[in-house]
Length: 623
Image (cartoon, rainbow, N blue to C red):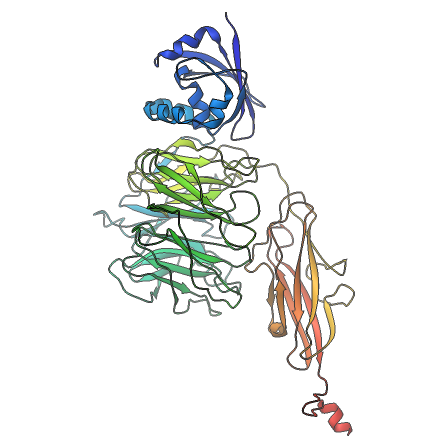
């Protein structure tokens, strides 16, 4: 029967997989139409038998993002090949990959398939943008999708709301008249605890507030700070002045305006007239938000997709005054145009990085990672080879290993791709998954989130050809584990909800003299068995009428691994006499202590000013 060879690798789910093949079949590898039979064994899985062209055997490892080792492998002529050839993913392999028929490429790439066959829901018109969130206040993620126009008056310029039902599916959509359809996002925009929907509109943004019955109210328009031919183009939500309220940012098509409009939410539950900042961008642009300098504040990232005269993206860093600094620009170098941008931690260092897609057909198609460093800037780009025409991109943990992965769409090539993050915090080669045909995707035409309540992230796509396309994740949710937040002052636990400040745990600052600040350091510990995230902006907030004399001078560093600790500092600096009480608020993902609240208190006394001879009133009366 000849000698058997074994190949072993670790797949995208971190399972060890072994293939055995018979030496007798090796000569067949010189003929593309011949096949060999291979027995595949996966840990915790039943033995399975698959048939695959042995001509594609080595490509299986190239395409599926496999870190492999073996006694013997084959080159493309069927000759023995040391694993060095596979590890290097040499140019011969890539040249041969280009020659592979599409069906062989799909079969190889899906060797680590985690998605069910795609589903599509027709909506008519021209779907543009999609977002995921709970928009009827039932605790389940829903899908919202916007359309532009395609000679379909019934469905043109509409907001489609797909509510998740109790069976984990999506109900038939409810339609609302919307704006121009270019972009959509979800956030609580009137501070009532319910998520609302914001869309782009003609020279404006439009807000659909959620009603108490879970429906959406009629759209309310907020005018842009400028008018243009292309109108408002992209929109995102975030806390852009660190007051704990969600705000909105929008940009226009870059050739019409470089303005970045920031609509701050006010205490009346409406949005203010936008403040305007400038970031250069040239068209086919994208907009993202995230903390890209690790200060706990939400920053704004604007990608330019057209014109070599502009850098690939610019960042507005939020400062502690609730404003934004002048933009900082980053570029790939050379004449490269980007097509999509995403923000998230892609190397497991608890700092948010930036991913862009760029290039056309392979071998000139890539994603690039701008990783955040300890100096609160971004490193030069690291590029990873990609399948043809990489466009929309997102970041999430798609395989439930507590490491973020990169998900993207390939315009015109029937493929979604995933770069799985490895245990060494680098990215594996791209794994491809089948989706229906669309020649192009809006940068905001991709969203990720749990759409059926099983604890795994799914993919939603706004597809102008097919409507709403869904890729449901078939992986089981990660094993149940929970973070547990504990806060101490002076090494003593401060109970969640404590309203009785004490000098023992440093929640009472005691007596302080005006002009002589007093600081207290508090420690946050994660005593649970899962990562603890602080979810507020900033991480530690102060709330209440007596907070004017207090400030957080050092924010904690997160996320916190199980058993980890971090610290924050609060300063009491009274400007006048009297007692001041303030509430410390820490939003987090501990299920039963969110938010974590406790009161702090200080009392201010004044002293004689030697320069003026001023005395406190009580002493003047005695004299």
